[in-house]
Structure formats: C-alpha cells, structure tokens
Image 1 (cartoon, rainbow, N blue to C red):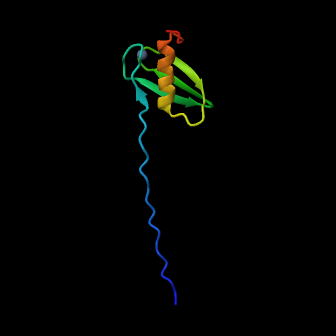
Image 2 (image 1 turned 90 degrees about the vertical axis):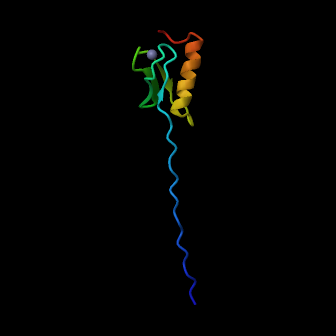
Length: 80
Ligand SMILES: [Zn+2]
C-alpha cells in the first residue's frame, strides 16, 4: 500500500514591478532614477542633474529613496 505522492504545484509569484523612474521635483522631467552603488543609493535626475546620495536602509525600496529625496528637496536641503 503506497500513498500516492501528491505533486506540489509550485506557483511562481510574479515579481511586482517597482517603478524605477520618477518625476524630478526640480525640473519636472520623468528622468529620475535610483541607482545602487555599493552601499549607497543615488537619486539622480537625467535632465537637470540634481542628485542626492543616501546610505542604504534596510527594507527601503527605490521609491522610498525617491520620496525622501522629494522631502529633502521641498525642505530646501538639496543643493541645486
Ligand atoms: Zn531634474
């Protein structure tokens, strides 16, 4: 008597596509990207060149760096 082994169906979850291009708060171009370089994340605009570097923060997605960037920008903490 053998139990039939039930095949486990492996369902591959589609990975959520996280937007990686954002709108620049400075010039309005949709050319802001978040790049990971070593342990730093750089938010940079491909149009006007405004940029800011962040230390890597656990659990943060590129969008979080971008949101933080916008906050800093609105507070006037980013040199233009
Ligand atoms: Zn810009």
